[in-house]
Structures are given as C-alpha cells and as structure tokens.
Picture (spheres, rainbow, N blue to C red):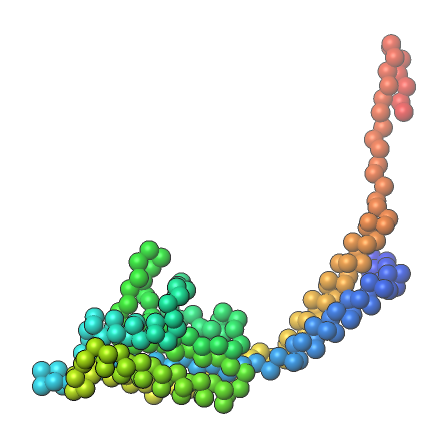
Length: 228
C-alpha cells in the first residue's frame, strides 16, 4: 500500500480514526495528570548494648540482634508471608507503586535459601507528596523503636542491656520520582497513531480481501491435452 492509498483509507474510515484520536487524547490526559511520586529508603540499624569488652556498638555483630530486627519487622507488617525478590535492592517504585510502605530485613540469599546477614531494617516509603513521605517516615521510625522497646520489656530485659535502633542519617533523603512529560506525551501520540493505522488497515483488509489466484490446470485425455 502506497502513502496515497493509506491516506485515502484513513479518510474512508474516519470513524475509526476519530475513535483512535479520542483514545489517544484520553491517554494523554492521564499522562499529564500523573504528577509523579516521592520516595525514600531509610535504614534502621540495630545496635548491641555497649560494654567494656565491646565499647563500639556499630562494630558488634550478633545473630541475636539480627533475629530481634526480624521480629520487630514482623510485628509491624503482620504474620503474612514476605515477598522474596531476586535482589534486595528492589524498591516500591520499581514495583510500580505510587503509595505505600514496607519494612523488611534484607535477604541476600538465593532462590532456595534465605540469608539475613545484617542487623538492620530497610524502610521503603512512597507517597504522592514529600510531606506525606516525611510524616510516614517519622511515624514508622517511631513505631520500630517503640516495638523494640516493648518487646524487650515483655522479655524482662534490663534497660542497661537494651538493644537500640539508630537511623542512618544519610538514608533519610526523600527523592522525587517522575518522568519527562513531553517525552511521555510524544510516546503516547506515536503509540496512538500506530494503533489507529493498524486498526484501519485491518478493517480494510477484512472488507476487501485480496483475491486468491487460481493456478492453471491441465486436463489430458488420451494422447491429446486441453489446458484450462
């Protein structure tokens, strides 16, 4: 089909073109309405109590502290199964979410075995506004620290031996997440035009199918032959 034939087909099938234009316009409005989101990944480090033998809490690693961090996360998120991803670096934004939060103990293990190697929780928050992220961040950090304190009081731990939770300062930054609107509109327009043209061509082909060429058949009788 030549360009002029395509233009004539588009003119003849103007109702399909109109539907395509309206659909593209609706998609463009939806793209413009998406104002993006804000995201933060905060790390909450669990620290062992200091002692003369271990004065630096940041360097003290313990399986018990890792277990405690995991229990605190479970108390916040509930007893449901935690989704396991191929990489611990997966974020809520990467999953396509625009509002929500998660608290989890990083799992660096493979498909068949878990591996919790660090005594820290990862707090992911995504929301439509920066203020919403900051408010939720403060709330969840407070809940983590409160759950940790309540858990130790329930177990009768002397406060002098308390495990504490410290927020890593460099991880509290809030980032804006959003694409380029002009680029998104351009892609939407191209996809709408391609879909409209494809619909027109499909309609024309079904309405005017290409005739099938019948091959010549030779009929022979005796020694003579007649070609049909």
